[in-house]
Image 1 (tube, rainbow, N blue to C red):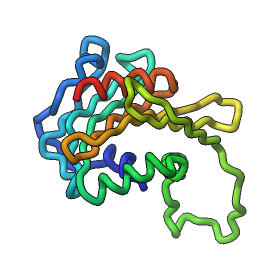
Image 2 (cartoon, helix red, strand yellow; image 1 turned 180 degrees about the vertical axis):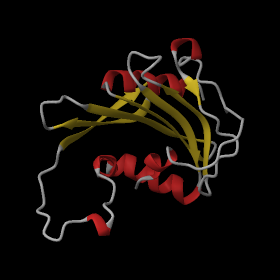
Image 3 (cartoon, rainbow, N blue to C red; image 1 turned 180 degrees about the horizontal axis):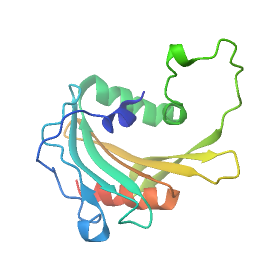
Image 4 (cartoon, helix red, strand yellow; image 1 turned 45 degrees about the vertical axis):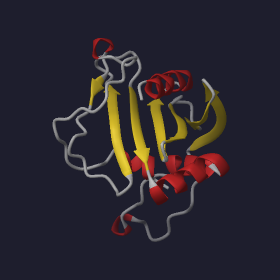
Length: 179
């Protein structure tokens, strides 16, 4: 399920910046993203999104607070509870290759990254940490931390992405507390 990944690609922007994530402020480089008129799937609403670009932050990052209802909420909640590894695999999966660019006899290559999934909790809220590390010596890595819980029938999801797993966990906690 590329749901969370797809949120980054949502088309159309308005001038409403949603809720403020007080622990990820602009004076520390975090920039709110306009979410007012974003078109989302039925049952999904963006509440806040912030980005910390390389130019203003020691460590680039992204954080979001979203709510899901109905089937979307049930599907994501099930993945997070029962099979977070499948969600992690969707994060690590490369984008599909255009059929016209595929080589006729391309040999399958070993994965270029290693993905691990672990569970954690932050203030009693269940979380999942997905870490993707390059297998080569370049040391590239990325971590996505996710906290989620039901509130008033909706699934509330906070997520944070960072090159550093500790930063991702810290930022997702800050995002969760802002709800």
